[in-house]
Length: 138
Image 1 (cartoon, rainbow, N blue to C red):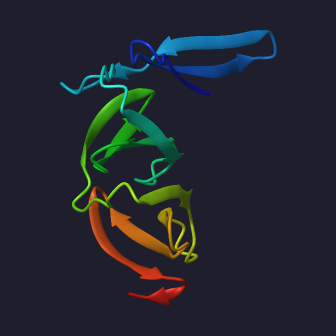
Image 2 (image 1 turned 120 degrees about the horizontal axis):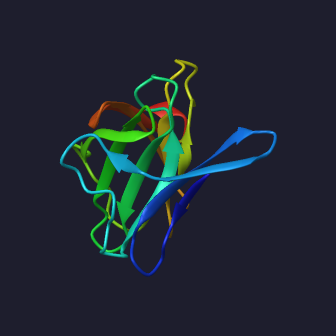
């Protein structure tokens, strides 16, 4: 489970360790990246295994600017991350991440809050490499 303190921005991971309880740990950083995001306009928008290493990664979205950042987690620590090569204005709302095209990699599903239009993005790392609109290739 992923927890975020809404006052401080501190991020914490809780994992089931065995049948007797839970193991708590603060998300550590294996790099110079900070794991406490004090600007509370940044929200965790989705989790998925974006890099295929078997661990859930974190997708952050800034509620005002629309910027989107991906944090890659390795062995329970923040290994790397960065701003996505493209960002959607705040009128586009991230609905979630999942394998929409059957390639065993999660795509991002976006919905326009006024028109209801849907688009999806295919990512390689933090780079937008493809996608489509309403099920048709872009």
